[in-house]
Image (tube, rainbow, N blue to C red; front, top):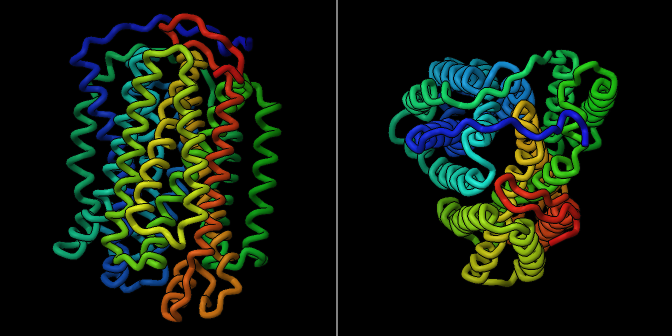
Length: 499
């Protein structure tokens, strides 16, 4: 075994009151970031009209996505060097400052810049929350808490769009940013003192500035291509091809830097570990597919089942709630059993088959039948969430936990962006030959096909088929992941294929 993956240091036991304060504080910090990804969507038309700029609305979302995703690995490394408390409080502070700037923005350009700043803080909140739970809890304990993280995302996905629409229409769109201030200050106050009691695992490190810059550059370029491709520019346009080429060059240079730097930005011993590698890739496909479904299902409900926008949001609730239930169940089972891979493998297998069924019957099934299928898919996908994070944290020493956890979250975000773009390309390709489905973007295709009375069920079948393949990929990667005993459990076999 690599020296960097030596057994972790003994954990200082925290009292229950401190643990509860830490958990509530970091969940609140995570809610800030998760809610800000969903609350803006329904307020966009109001913001565009008020600022007199409807053309650049998409950049309000894109700017946040670019900065938050790109800096996620950086937060993990910094927290390994300077400590979780300092890094989390810094992230909360940046997020609050960005929120104030968003609320006061006098123009669209100012709002886009403020959203970029807000994302610089938001990018650390989710991965640091996972890491801090890893510091505060034993591996067996943290498996139980991972389900609460899923609940936060489910709450944000359900409440965010509703809250954004109500605040922007009944009051003023700036309130969707002002509400971050009291929530952020509460999270800051709750964690500032409690995190002083966390066990400290910092070691002398150097930040590989060149490696960090290359990773950020490669990520931003790739996300730009995925955001613009098929929407602002055609996929085969010189602009998109040039950005993709530049991103490939940056990724190659980043890999070379990892292999040659005295202390690479992401430790090679961690990246090469079989648990970290396979769990991270399983999350890439599993969580990415989940995000892709949550984006395309409302479009399916509206264009195929002819639900209203509000009703389509309600129709997505069973998927979200069942995902949380699956995560809660898997986390609790993981804390109690030796062969913890069995639960997510069964869940992913069932989810993959069910998604395949959805692809076949989606154009003819009733809403009730669709909801039953989505509930089963949510239960299955949810079982993956806690296992990937806890398995990775269990595999690395505490002084690398921040980097490892941030890498998992970074790949989840990157996977979401790539898979959403892939679903978009499949959908556009599926409707390309349909009469009456003109336009270049997904929204334009749906609008024109709906106006012409053309059914898009077949195009969505292609998206659901791709989703089934994505879930199957997560299943295979989790199957290949080495199953190491969770610390505090009896030794288990280390065979990757042992179930």
